[in-house]
Length: 217
Image 1 (cartoon, rainbow, N blue to C red):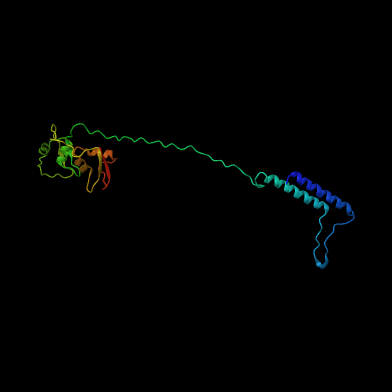
Image 2: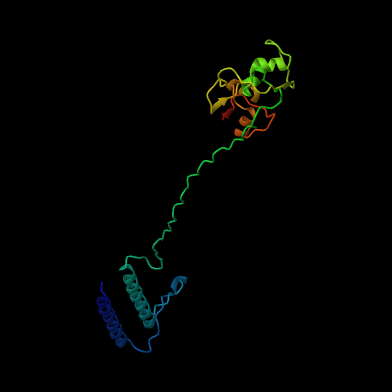
């Protein structure tokens, strides 16, 4: 119903009430229900109260109509959700740092102390020394055994007869049972145990674990 229709109904109701009021005597007091049989009297609404109720109902209906026309329930606030988008973080690709290996000392040392897993022929190959000259300089034979801590004299001005490398490197090596840095270096022939330690962030005397993978420069 439109506002115009509500207004017409309101005018008709007011006119009817006014006609009714003219027919009643001004001295008539509001009627109450009978108190017979001990019932509680129920007061009859007065004309002014009826008018207030009609006006209140009309205003409420009009307010509800105006509110519902927008498609929203009265008293319920509506809002448009907002979303905040953050800029994706760019993951920079890390540039691998090249491993820096120490440079072996130039020349051949005059002496060398045997470490675990090493033997005279290994030392001769490593330092590019003729093995016969190394054995002779230390009073050793082809079958001589040397213990850890033995200090060998390294002869100068000789060279290993043939190819010193036994295995190609740089490469990786998986540590086996009983391996030491010295024995691993001897297995590659010309590898330097100190450079293997440096390449793997190990210190002298470090204990190796079976299955450990080492970088062999």
